[in-house]
Length: 638
Image (cartoon, rainbow, N blue to C red; front, side):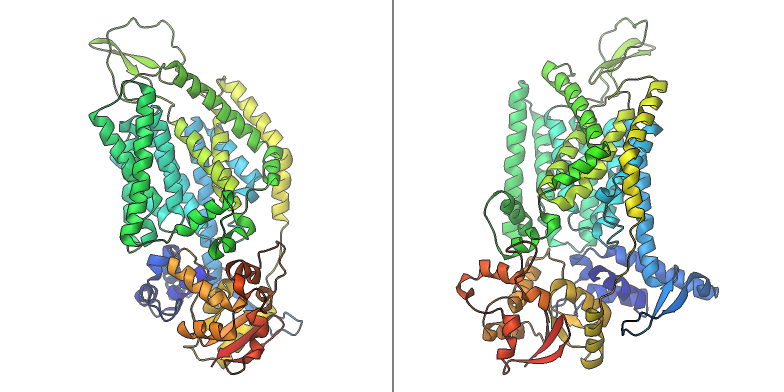
């Protein structure tokens, strides 16, 4: 609802320019503060979709064809609820918005096919990757449940970026390839505030392959610089978003560049010492850059991320961390997830590929058979006798090239770039284990790696045997995978929340357009969308100032005195506070995770007091009850 409200702003504004101005000068989302929504909330997708809809609507109206694209029905809902109008077709702004997202989700599947084809070097790899995606669809994406999530817009660009990255690492860079990677990175960064952490894992994966000498500086430099340029452009387009400026990705990028410059000047002859020096310099500089930038700019927007990680392995807890880790999506991954992967053979297939690659590259690393010269560059050697028969290429092996000057030895087209994908999967796997929500990175990447089953490099085989193996694997996967698809196809439902609807109708009828509201984060997002009233807090929790503002508002669900709650709400210019009875109680599926219980952890001295939202009636000189139904109460701050 929060993100969709900005799409609605663009669509309903008198002009696109007026809608843009309302976004860059938003006064109603964190009242009375003036904020730039494009800087804070990653809502460029809503600007794009809103602009496209405005053009589509103008064309349809101009040709008198809107009736073809939009059909409306009167719906008698019964149960004492008023009839409503419901419209279908691309001419309806909400249907257009959702369909646009589903088209992007379709592009994700197409890109997954292309990545699978490229890595495996044949079409069977693409078919295998896409089949794995659909057989495990419920674990790969959430677009079917919550279309406006930022990941719905970003993940297709992540796959596009992975494709260009692989092409550059394997086949060398060119201007077109680097421009493609830059544009893909921009598309990935703009819609999602967490993209910086994925780029961090990319940098770490590239560094892992480089420090172990699987990739050369000539290979990683164009990738590093192209991704950085895309990131920088995205940062500028987001009006220098502070979370991006002080990101850990930026620190690791700068550290990596310094390591490359250092190695260009001098290298240690001993590989072990060289590796230790690279890692030491990289880690120390990354930490220094991160802490220094955060301190110099007084930024702590991403501090909650590190606190979440800290809470996973220690007994550290605070108010903001508990709000996150009490959510099931931020818990450790469930064993049931891996059971599902085993049943569809996705996990066994991925592990088989990982083990095969680890053995090949591990043996190559230990034996030291790789050339000391940068991989992927031309290195001439003394003339050698041409072999009578072509031999299979191995990692780091040579090919013999005949020229007018005689036969020369050059490094073969190497598959060492696959080490990057091994490291990247390791990062995604670790992220998913720690935070279950992040399996949306791990699972599609498992599908990508499974495509290597059709690769000669991973599993040398004839063309006929390759078709047989892939066909048998797909047949075995489909036993459980097709059942998963049927379960998803059978899901049907409708949304109905009469109590919230009654609340919003009352707000529209009995409060001024300029009225200011406070309440739970999800409710405030919907209230802003449906009524257009000013709110002081919302669910976009990545800003440190907003986190403290929300904590102040949530005193309504604490055991603090009425006087203290009144003083806090007054300081935020709140006129109406909405109390949700579900948030006022200490009854939640997980012990210690209701808002009053979280406050008990934070505010020990008031544990013996009643919860304010249940005790508000005892402060008639400060608050007046204006409205109530089965779920919500609206109190006016005097």
